[in-house]
Image (tube, rainbow, N blue to C red; front, top):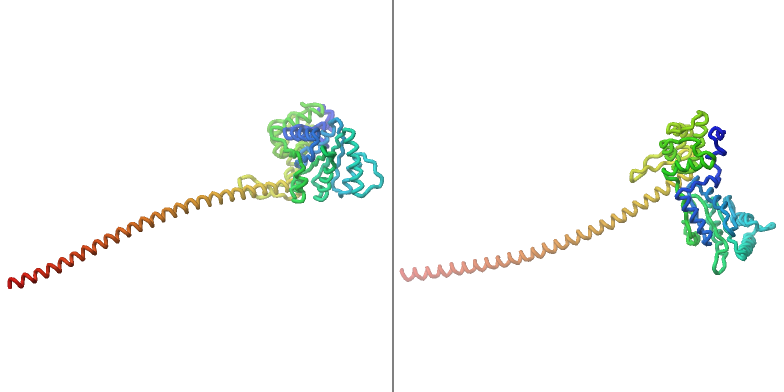
Amino acid sequence: MYQSFFNLTSKPFDLLPNPYFLYLSKSHKRALTYIDYAIRERAGFILVTGEIGSGKTTLIRSLINRHHESIVLARVFNTRVSSEQLMSMINDDFDIAEKNVVEKTALLRNLNEFLIEQYAKGNKPVLIIDEAQNLTPETLEDVRMLSNLETDNAKLLQIILVGQPELRQTLALPSLMQLRQRICFHCHIQPLKQEEVGEYILHRLEIAGNRQAVLFSPLAIDTIWKYSRGIPRLINIICDFLMISAFAEEKKQIDEEMVLDITGDLDFENQYWSSSMPDLSTDGKTISMITGTESATAIAKLLREVTERLDKMGKEAAEYRKTADKVFDEKLAAWGNALLLQVHETNDSIGIINKKIENIIKEMENFTQYEEDKNQNNGFLRKIFK
């Protein structure tokens, strides 16, 4: 619609996960490097997580387009299936010839034979399961069992699990401890940082044919980051509408006011973030309540924030109790020592007083004896002089 006006060869902000448009942010580049290394080194399980729209599928498709030598790939994108269906889809994508095979044991046997054959040829079979957060714990355990297909010194199959952060919550279940222990690499794709958004926009314009097609002001870019939270898919939604609006107004500059108009027309906060909730923070940060069209991602994020803060409060409370107990013990010991000192001093004082009383009593006894002797002498003298 607007490609010719901006001298573009394709839509720069299409929502399709086109690997040619992949922008390697610091987080995306690190994840791609880890995955590439793990595949080359025949690592076991690889876990890739990220928020909805963070670019996980685009990253995986870029990986698929890289022609690794001797790599045989199988991709599964539909994960709302039973264990048997998943196994059948894996075999089908590996192009394993099967006729009316539906039992899990037969499917597993055929897969094992295929993997041994590929190993003999020097190939490296890799299974990519996208949207893995939809898999049940039971199905994930069956996936773990696939990693048991191995020789004495090498894994016959590498497995890459790709999913939203909820996948990590599922993997945290006690029943999946063995699967967690087999994960060699875990890459979490972070949203774009504020300083990366401008370069992301220019990158997509350049891939679409014209890096200078339209000029985004710094404030416009900051506002796009604010409303998108750095999620590439949401950046694309905002920018696509901005391109349409600029085309309609025959402009080639986009400012903050235009971004605010678009996000307001789209009711962006409620439509994509659904944030309206009282402040529940303990450190001045706001946690938003989910209302209206509820976002599962936002809910999960909210729960993670609450959990992290509760953990933090628990640790602080434990540390405070530990410190308070230590201070109390020290004060109690000091009070005890002071009390013992007072008791000793009191006992000494009582001893001194008792001695003084004894001395006074003796003095009084001596004085009384003196008076008696004096009276006797006076009586004796009176008798003499009478």
